[in-house]
Length: 457
Length: 106
Image (cartoon, rainbow over all chains, first blue to last red; front, side):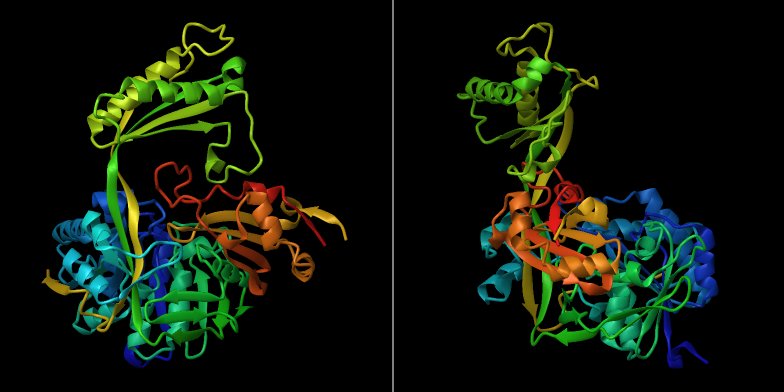
């Protein structure tokens, strides 16, 4: 029976993020199950705004190449497609191009021949501004309305595509589909949706598979999972005999990184898990059924964008002196005053100076009203963000030397207040970005904003 | 009614970003019986969660009891967006510790 008429569709998810790796034994076991597609998510916003701004991946180039150099030839040999979402970690044009470069190297080294589709997801600023004027952009959650100024300040703006561009690329005969920013389940769900399988189950299975064996017990971000989609259910299972899926581990995964486990919104509609049932089929397999898809009347895609706020220099330094520790708040305040005063007439006013104090609610800094912590050692990270790297170096260096020799009340350790773990003590960290676009955009055509180009190798 | 520390009755207590502007907390209980009692007593609620973290109830976006996983999920507006200046937990993965010591009554 040909794949096209099968009553089920199998999706192999080798790893949670392209570049996180997988054991070849697990992958080979996955290939023995005759999958219909190998799909992988290559990105996330979790590592923060830097990577979208810098056009650089949080994953390692060699590690990404290692994963693809196993996945692509195996898929070609089996005659099945490889679908990659959120290329290069963030999915803007430089991230996609970097991954195209990696694939070209693999093609060259392994003498491979196939058709590749490359789907871009970075939006031109003029297009986004036109959409603002048309009233097609809406804040997503606790953010302000998007302004044209925000768009002008942004470095890259990407949109999360739905499954439609993947389907278009697949139907055009692409064997490898490399997409920019994608709604995570798409690379897993698009083949099934194109073949008429239930959309709700296809997307829900994608939601589980996109994290690969994180759903299993023991969980792992670097091991393979298989999903089998049937007419009215799907089954997920790990491919490494040391792991199991349990009804609980799969149900609990519906919570992971989501706002609300019952309603999971995406392009074109939301998954509704109110009636979902998770059933243990065997020692390692879990069956899921009952999930619904509730379409929205209009089609929205999520936009992500970042702006540059300056350049960072930081200096980690520590103290074990109980007198210094007892006065740390005052010391920080006085050092800050001295820095401000010293550069009052320098023109360097627009900088951010922060002291992150570990051992005294460093981690819980976001919640100042939570219970205090105390320690007999403190790590102080002196951080300066300024308009140029040189200014950041100046502010951080001056704050560091001032703190090192600051004569606080009752000091008996007069040789220096800080233990530096490194020489040089200061670290130049380059450009600093922050998210400034996190909005929904209404679009009419689900494919047109995501242009596809094809390459023949 | 008795008081119970979450660390004694939960098998998972975690926090994580749900996008750069939200933080989400999951408490997965050790067994369905305990979960059922917590849920029936509404022992984790907006009031005691906000008191624990020192935030306003209007910052809580969702507080959901999720039966299939015997879990409570609380999603809040992030006081500082992920990676913004002044922030100290880009992934939001270490904001859970106050919940471990939280005492709930049922």
